Length: 171
Image 1 (tube, rainbow, N blue to C red):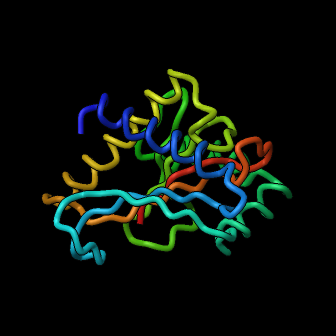
Image 2 (cartoon, helix red, strand yellow):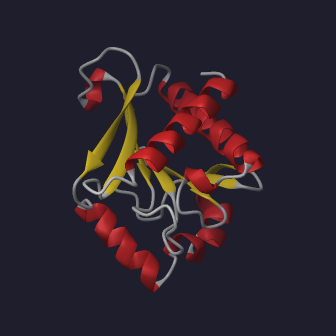
Image 3 (spheres, one colour):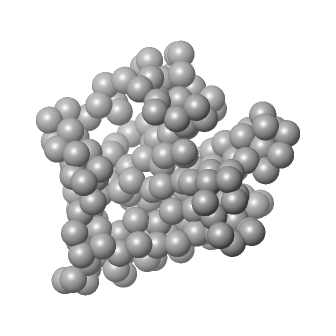
């Protein structure tokens, strides 16, 4: 997608986060994008969905706990910037986590802590959008076809969280 459409998508996620997270019966909002029958997608075109959970999923609970103890993403940022990056600019980095679980796993991480994309300024939002575009194009180029993927957004359950570090995980 062109950058303008990706930025529009990010704004849609921000809108959904801010509208859904204030509801009493919703404890966690999780947008995700997916593409490809090989990873279980039943629709034949790339698409996204947004889950609104009445609980905080276990993976996010573990991340909340970890971020409260120490921001492990900032702790490994130097290593990511030097050894593991796929793409980076002044605001964002796309990197293979040193503890990757999947063959083509890439995380997109803001270089400063933000709870979610709702905290991005215009430059960060543009940088994030460019990075998303580059990662998907890179996957496609590497595999010489449209790469199947699931892309999950990991954001804080609360819009005002001061310890959670937003990131995106491609599986």
